[in-house]
Image 1 (cartoon, helix red, strand yellow):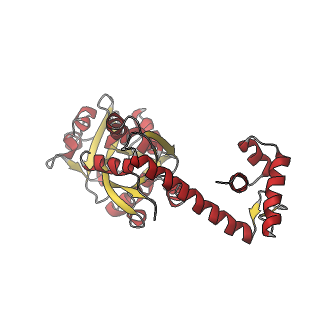
Image 2 (cartoon, rainbow, N blue to C red):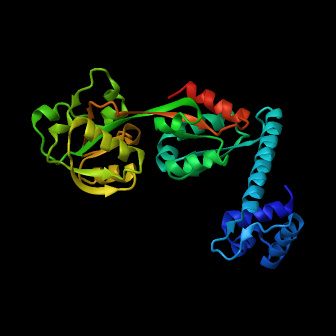
Image 3 (cartoon, rainbow, N blue to C red):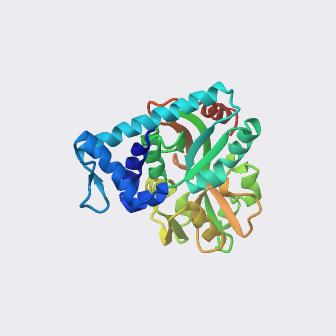
Length: 311
């Protein structure tokens, strides 16, 4: 890409000439002169300079749209050249939430890197909403979602799943009828909660237990609300946290009950009980999502194959 276009795009990204100059390692006067030259050639300003942060003029919006198309073509050309090398070079960029990157993806990344050691993997980590925005902007090769309304918007492939459990500190007194249905961390790690005859409880059996709620902007937080609505339970909310991992750590500390993914349980946890419960929302099935209308590199295709052969 021409240098001037890189300059213009960086100013668009940063919304500031000074910040863009810093990111590009050039002086601000040199950057301004280069962009003024382009504006003179096309006969129109690209930025509203009186606004902070800088915004695009209508001509600027059109110009940036063509820069993005050019960037995408350059990216696809590089990917296709890498593919001609037979997976002996190249890179992929995947995106996930903190939970996905820390608890779901590591075993798949391990298998992939052992099989294709010359492929460089870059992982982005942010919220689910932001991941979808990055995918739409072709800044990710793929991401994951278990939200059906999101999945249907993209070309998607089966990936992995998790099961939602109720975690309850063991110091809370329970009747024997419930204690007999409790699972230990070792039971969960061994997959006994997945057995067809695994004991299940009703959430209404825990009316007075303080509940650690998860922010509704997080998938499990929104799913928790659906679970309570489905079961007709109005929980005694004790505290609200932004992440499911935080909720689980607080449950382990004895603060209250929480929903959690079975993927968080490593089998060594003590002083906590786990319960399976009846709900159509208790299983989350994730799908790998690809960006619209872009070339799918061979390395991404191999990652999809890997997901199909394991869980």
